[in-house]
Length: 443
Image 1 (cartoon, one colour):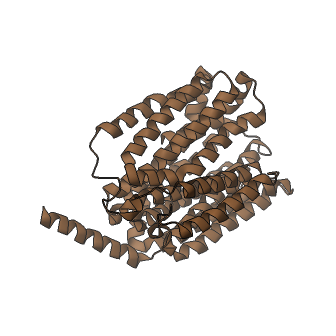
Image 2 (cartoon, rainbow, N blue to C red):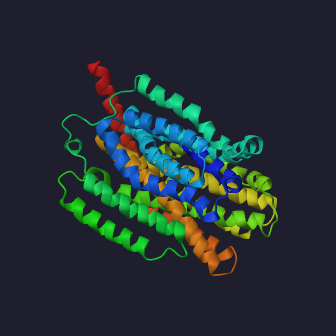
C-alpha cells in the first residue's frame, strides 16, 4: 500500500515540484521513468535473493531503504538529487514487492492463497483511491516534499517489525534445494538490461531512438541463451515450466495494459473535451477503486466455485466492456459505470492470475514467482500507455486507442482459457486438506 500510494501522490505533486526546483518537463518525467526502470530491472533478481536469504529480510531491507530514500527526496536541493534518489527508491521497491508474495506463499498452503492475495489487492485499490486526495491535501498544505515525508514513519515501523516479530515459518531457501546453491548474477544482469531498456523504450514512445530497442533485444537473446546453459538459472524450470504460469503472466500484462492505457486516454478526455477539473476527475474515477476493493475479496469465492479459467475469462470480458463503455460515455452516470466495470474486472483478474503464478511455484522459488508477477504488473502499464500515446498521435481522438485497448483485454480473455479449471482448484484444496491432516497427526 505504501508503494502504491507513493506512485499516486507523486503524480499530483509533480507540477509543484517542477516549479519549486526550476526543472524541465523531461527532468520531472524522469522522476517516474527512473523509478520504473529501476524496479522493473531488479524485481526477478530481488525475488531470487528473497528465496535464498529470506523474504522477511528482503522486505525489511526494502522497507527501510524505501523510507530512507523518501526522506532523502524530501531534503533534496535539486532535481538531479530527486531523480537519483527515485532510482534508489525503485531499487528498494524491487526488494520488498516480491517479498510480500513470498511471505504469503510461505504462510499459507496453496488452497488458502486466495483471500490473502485479495487483501493485498484491496490494499492497492485503497491506495489508488486515497492517493489523489492525500497527495492534493499534502501538496496544498505543506508543499511537494510532504508527499515523500509521509512514507518515512510507516516504512521505518514496518521494516523494524519485519525484523523483530516472529514469522509464520522459514521463508528462505529449503535446505538442500539446488536452486539455492548459487546466485545467477550474469543472468540477473542480462535480464536487468533487457527489462530496463524495454521499459525505457516503451516510456519514450513514439520517439524512442534505436539504442534502447536494440539493447533490449540483444540482452534478451543473450539472457535466453545463458539460461539454457546455466547450471543454476535465475528462472528455474519449476517457475516458468508450467503453461499456466506463462498464461497467467500474459493475462496480467494484458489487464494492466488495458487498464492504465485506458486511464491515460480517458484522463485527457475528462479534462479536455468534457472540461472537468482534477478534483471532479478523481471523483468520477472513484468507482474504479471502490469496485477493485470490493471485487478482490469476492474473487476467492469465484475461484472455489468456477476455477481460475472461468473467473479470469469473465473478469477480462468485464474489463473489456468497461473500456468500451468509457469509449462512448459522455455523462457522469456512464463514466462512473465504465470505471466501476474496470475496477471489478481488474480486481478480480489481479487475484485470480496472481494466485495461479504463486500457487504453481515451489516454496523455494516463491520469490522468483513474485518477481515475475510484479514484472508483468510493471511492463503492462508501460505497454498500455505507450500504445495509447502512439495511437493518439495517429489522430482520431480517443476512439481508436480505446478500441485497441478493449481488444487487448479481449485477447487476455482468450489467453485466460489456458488457466486451470475448477478441477485443478479442487485438487489443490484436497492436497491442502491432506497436508494439514498430516501435520495435525504428527503434532
